[in-house]
Image (cartoon, rainbow, N blue to C red; front, side):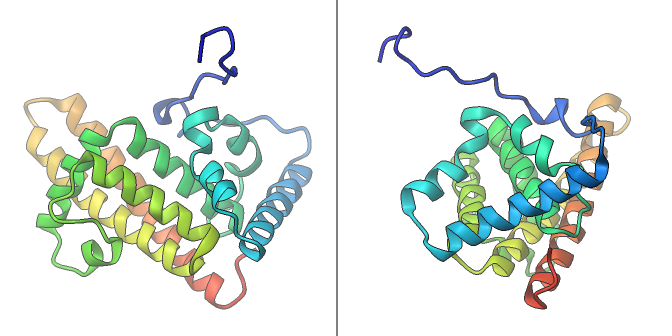
Length: 212
């Protein structure tokens, strides 16, 4: 396909630009209503009649279009809600796609550090390289649309815990020699730990038909 005929896509926004970004809203109540209604409608429609091509597009959405469109809908939703959970999964996916090498290093360090079932629950191969982690996070996201939604959230939470443990380990490695890098890994570990808690809570709410 020539450059002239290639469909235009917006530039992909990267996670570092988005974690602390606030989206303006003249009416927060309306933003919340739209966030919840769109998340519920999307999930209900796709899960009722799962179509492989549609699911492929949903999984690949952020890679093609960036994450601004999703963020404007879901990023300000409370963590333990359906749009909040979907937002965290999409942002986690984009983080892994953006830097799979660091993600693989972090995951492997976490897997070696943790003495829990989290690596098994997450489902990554051993050892997990960059390509394997990209496939894993896409598979987890796909599970939201065509598998057991709560299981997908539990896998994502376990994945976050492994990554958080690895990031903590790497932060200690760089402490005193590369302070900026150590701080960055510490920040990542804290954020991933929060995501793990939020996603686990969302899975429990889903099982009680209480994730709205």
